[in-house]
Every structure is written in structure tokens, then in C-alpha cells.
Image (cartoon, rainbow, N blue to C red; front, side, top):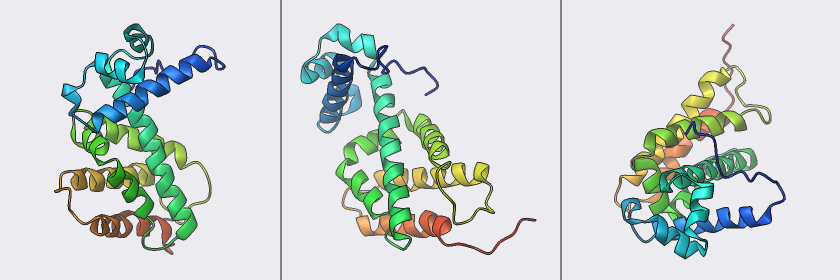
Length: 196
């Protein structure tokens, strides 16, 4: 995921570029709900998006880069749901919004977390969590941020990856309990620890 993004328009006011990128993202998400990543062609993506084949390559080098672009957006959205739940509720069940979102988009998240992009997804979780950690006070400021960010992001990533490998009827409530016990409680419950 270290490649520079081609999805940023050269002119911030170029609405056409934004529309074509959004159309490609939406088409890809629609297709990933219907079939495996390996079975999706770039021609299918462009046809579904209603954009020309060359337009795709002006924005992305291939479907893997489009997937990475979507992954960045999805991770940011997912971690934002988790952060907002924690800030708003500060109790058990805070992972519910996050888990419901993943459940609603299970096919995409299965692809993102268990497919070939898994290691890049882990890095993306840590990168986005690092960016988001700069906002607001923390319940446990004694915990070094450079440890808290990768630890928390990795825990969320591992729980979700494990979940995506379970049968689809695995109880959502169990995943919420795991997330609350292993991640959210650790973040939200203040602990009187000093590392002096």
C-alpha cells in the first residue's frame, strides 16, 4: 500500500474525475458481492460503472489498486464507527456498529481480510488508526501511543479476520462480545497504572 494514490484528481474541482472514481468504486463493490475477486474483469468493472475502459487506467493500474483504494476508505470508515461508538457509549456493546457494518458487507470484508490483500490490510489498519489516534484525549494516557495504536489495530484486524473465516451463521453477538472484551474494554476503562 505504499504506492502513491492515483485517485486524487489533478484539479480539486474536477467533478468528472470524482464521479468516475466513485462509479468505479461502486461498480467494484457491486461485483464483489456477486463473485470472487479473481472472476471480476476490468471490463466488467468499467461496464458496470458506465465509464470507458481507458478511464479506468487513468485512475488505477489494475483492479488490485482499486481494491486498495476501497480498502483504505473501508478501514477509515470502520475505525471511525468504532471510535464514535466508544466515544458515545463507553460501555459493553460499543463494537456493535462496527460489527454490524462488517456483517452487512461481509463478502467485501472477507475478500479484504482473508484474500491476497491481508498483509496490506493489516498495515492499513495500523496506518489509519495512527492517524485517528491524534484526535482527542485517551482514557489511558499511560499506555504509549506507539504501542497502543498497532496493538489495538492488530486486535481488531485479527478478530475480524478470524470472524470472516467462520461460517456465515456464526453469531454476531459473539463477535461483539469478543471485540468489547478484548479491545474496547481495554481502551475505555481507565486504569490507574503508572509507568514512571
